[in-house]
Image (cartoon, rainbow, N blue to C red):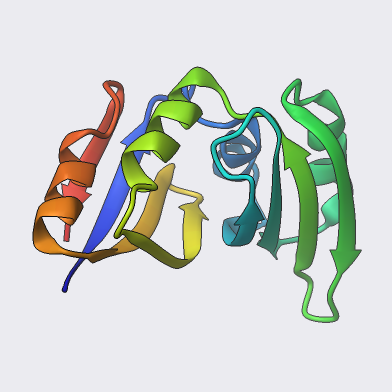
Length: 146
């Protein structure tokens, strides 16, 4: 087994609009993808923990995001919140999921969407499978192996 920690970066116009919201707004440090079902399908269901406050501007951005089909926000006492969301991934999102979700490979939770525009994640699996995943990340997404 091998593991690799990756930092991914993509241009703002390619980045998911809710990740771009975190980048552009003070008070939001990161959103952490905790779990997801139907990842890579046309409608995926995801659970995030958002390190940011207040939730109302985030809610407005969710309403404006064309890919978001349904969502619910639950606030926490520490000025963070959980987000349940049903979302349709972009073409780049589909390609990225295809690269990183293959037989024998595990994405370790959480996947962190940082305010600096990067996405941090760890992959675990056989060396060749990990390498193949890194090599097939779509064009327009830069990969820094750490």
